[in-house]
Length: 143
Image (tube, rainbow, N blue to C red):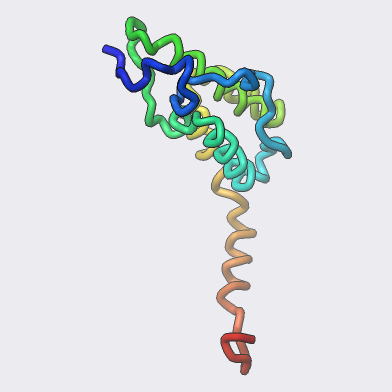
């Protein structure tokens, strides 16, 4: 049975199923596109953009796919596909092709996180070593 809180998705801009007239599947949410080396800044910018459109529940999986006979199935599918297209259009072509056949925005988001959030492990180790060697010398806290 449909959740009555979601019944007003055509008129309530706070409803995650609401679509504004400027929301379209060809939208590039952020630049630069995800290229595999810029995951952390890309993911942060994407999440902010998707949150601003009240669609973050499709990324984090907090709005699961309803059963096909549920009245909310069609609006869920439409919004999920919209978020998927935003993700695909905000990635370089080779990455977009790798997630093309993933049906859930949450699954695509998780896949990208699993693949690209690790970063350059050698650079991370190098930065950590530099951080641990920082010293204040004879300067006080305010200096």
